[in-house]
Amino acid sequence: MTCTENSFLEKTTMPILAGLNLQVHSDDPVNDPVNEGVNEGVNEGVTGYALNERQRWFLQQLQLGHRVSPDEIAQYWKKSVATVERDIAGLRKQNLIEFVGAPKTGHYRIKPQQVEG
Image (cartoon, rainbow, N blue to C red; front, side, top):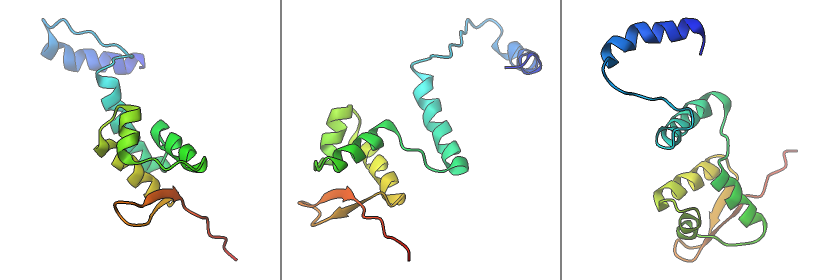
């Protein structure tokens, strides 16, 4: 943060926050995950889609020939199934994976890349 930005923040927020004992930490375990999610969402629209660690792991499992369900991924990463499904939807949106087979017995696989020519 530049000196000018810091002065601006002091002038605009200090009167409002007077009397509060607030501490700001750059490694805040509560706000960092929220901020990272928001920032990734904003940056994704600007810079293209970046794969997160879970998505890279899932692609690696598929490359190794493993069939991993959303429930298994959620359990492994200790995340909700909804979060895993969003991760999978992102991979599908990027045309990296596809679902093959029936809804109950099918599985995901790495999508074959079509060669233009």
